[in-house]
Length: 161
Image (cartoon, rainbow, N blue to C red; front, side, top):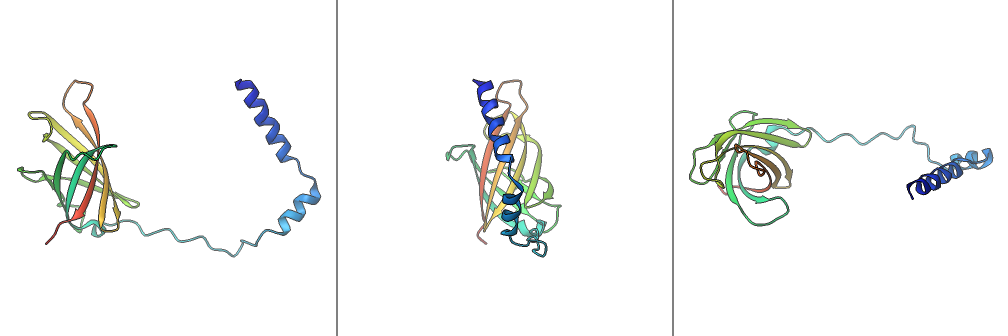
């Protein structure tokens, strides 16, 4: 069956590639001249100021709307001083980097809110979507079990002042 598909694909490719010179020259004369058309400029790179402020995040499993926990993100106008605060906890400092339209955060190991007594470290990627943050997080638990890595998603809204 695979050979049949490969042979048909090759036959179609060879058949489509053969053109006589008259049809090739007539088809190119109908194309617009793009030699003076400029490409659209790339959007400006994301900066810390694009994310600065306070955000209330809702954390859910990937592919599910059940809320697992909430957190508060403090984003400064620089790449330093960012923190994540979980309910009833002290702020966790975040390492932050920017690339394209995304901000990536890494939290050092802290005690998990979801698994009492288990340490977890997280890495997240956030994008701005209007006045909201949309993000994915990978949580790495300090355990030898099969569920030592969990994928989560976050939705953030600006904190009311």
